[in-house]
Image (cartoon, rainbow, N blue to C red; front, side):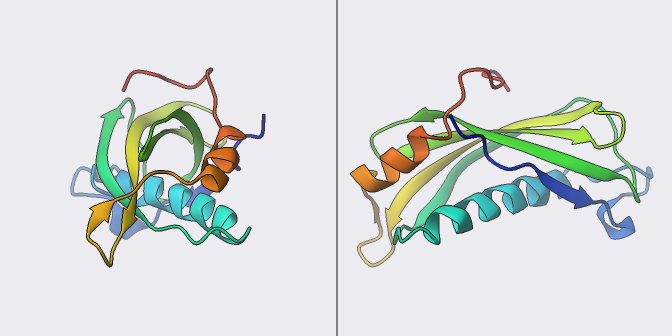
Length: 139
């Protein structure tokens, strides 16, 4: 099975808070960066697909700071009828220390009709290639 490419993120000073560590909201930008790169890769393969983020949750395990490089490792852990679940883990790149872990539920969506739609056979076949049973199941 293919794994989703890791995404490196350089932590900018503006992403930190008065405590000097990465603000809790900034992590969601990092997760979004990883998802966006993944979506772009499957969209480039000719899939005309629209998604919405239905749920996102994060556990903060350790602090990260400005000027660090973080690596977001992503995988798909569940494929349903209209949605799929991605898990993200953020590590400090040089030490490989776990910083945060998250789960996101992504829904296939028809913006014209304003409703969720089933995952197409073509998309399901693509997603199955990236499913990981070894990923963190609990967030």
